[in-house]
Amino acid sequence: MLRPMKTPIYDFVTAYAASSTARLHMPGHKGIARLGPEPFDITEIAGADALYEAEGIIAQSEENAASLFGTAKTLFSTEGSSQCIRAMLFLAAAGKKHPGKARILAGRNAHKAFLYAAALLDLEVTWLWPGAMPSLLGCPLTPGRWRRPFWRAPSPMGST
Image (cartoon, rainbow, N blue to C red; front, top):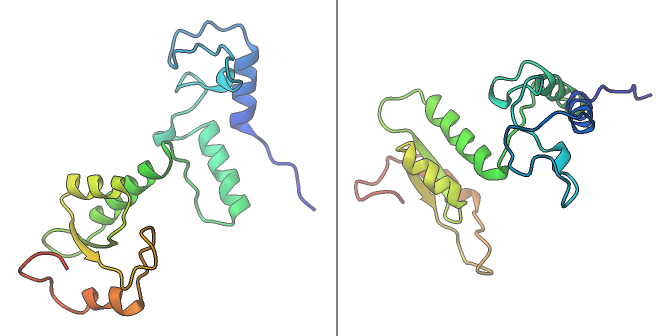
């Protein structure tokens, strides 16, 4: 039997939207419902917690999500996949154990956010080129195509 779970973020934004608090903070719509969700759109205000230093309602909600997903930890993100890609590459670069530039393998159809983050983090990218292309949108990679870069040194002529 499922037990009811607390909803700290929902409870906070619902109470805030129902209050008569003057919104002298971002976002600029000031909670005026033009499309519907604006009254629930807030910034990091007192009681709302801080996404990157969560200790209150966001931390509680992340713990709830981890429990639901069966994971050791769940972290919320903003800005969709772009922010997550940047965070993933930053953590990969920060965790490298060998001297020199961090090296990462990537399919040639990588997201633009990957390209920008790799450049900013000064990562060495080894491109994995696909075999026969069934369509312009595909990038099929066989095990042989990704295994090869692991077992040989990088080419002096640049990335493969």
